[in-house]
Image 1 (cartoon, one colour):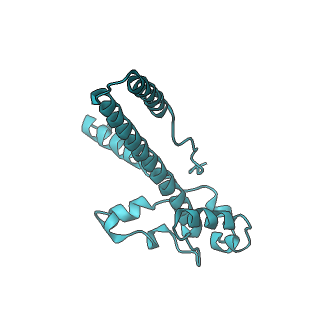
Image 2 (cartoon, rainbow, N blue to C red):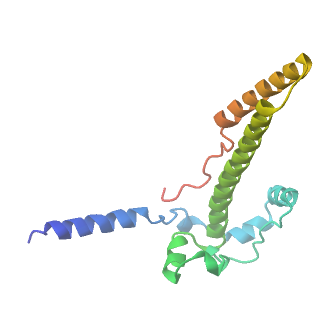
Image 3 (cartoon, rainbow, N blue to C red):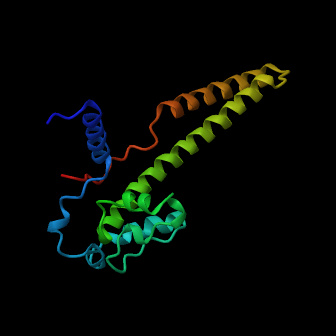
Length: 174
């Protein structure tokens, strides 16, 4: 029996919804040593701890194989279904580490945009101040003109530069 147009559309929308859900990491079945145990012997972990210390934060601690859903703040989700969906495909301590990478990356991108916007706004205010400043002597005008040109070059660079050039570290569903 042929499907009606509304049934075909409903099935299409369901397929599209499922396609947007995070894929299960295809490496998981092959990972035997839990990630938290692996970290105990990885000499590179001190570099992660050092980076967090330089930021004034405590590095995450992986004491057991609990997944990311165990650590997420309860106010982050509108419902339990949203909470479960957010961590679908991320299991155990390795999933927690992968979720951290995604969110650290997202936070870094957002913070870099905020810093860039702040600098641009402040520099534009300095330019406006220079335009309205009273300059009596030719030396004052020359200094103000040079300062304005310098600020303009800085603004051009801030608008051109990409502050974050990191690539995603995790590829799900390979």
